[in-house]
Image 1 (cartoon, each protein chain N blue to C red):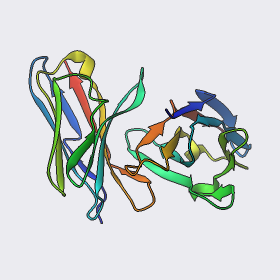
Image 2: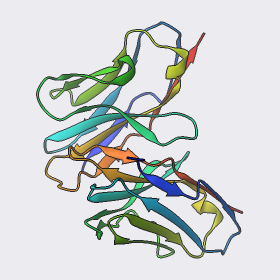
Image 3: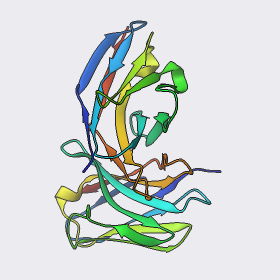
Image 4: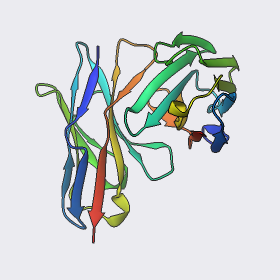
Length: 112
Length: 115
């Protein structure tokens, strides 16, 4: 298996633009998680899905953030409009049988 | 609610010396415990995990951790570190009652191995 695949790896955009981050989980994993990593706040759980259904989105910072999982092999995290304080590395992870998470390489977002 | 505290934000150590990275957690229920490692510009990789059974858990790259329920700790150790162990290390806890296996991470410990 190729592991969790995220795209793009790097994104530079201007304030106010829409940003879409993509994730393909490991086949057969039924949980998918989105995390955000910054120096100030460390790793924060934004939202997670079970069988494509959002279970807990309490970590989503505000309405500008939205996430979808239209099928078992694809998820998106969208920020509209983006702001400089959204600059971070965004990780997608999927869950194995014993609760361990497998992480993608991350998407580094810079909002100017 | 669960929480994880990594007691040291940075740990400098010389090559071939032993190292211990400390982790304490708080939870009102039984938990699973994990250590992850993050190399620069990469995602997190699982080092080891405690689910049940023996309290001494061995992981990859010569690391091990000991679960101490009375002290609510899960410290990570390696008897002799290499330059290549330089990375950020994260302790994480998952609530056994939470079917989602949501992981709560500590703030991370930056291990710096010097020659």
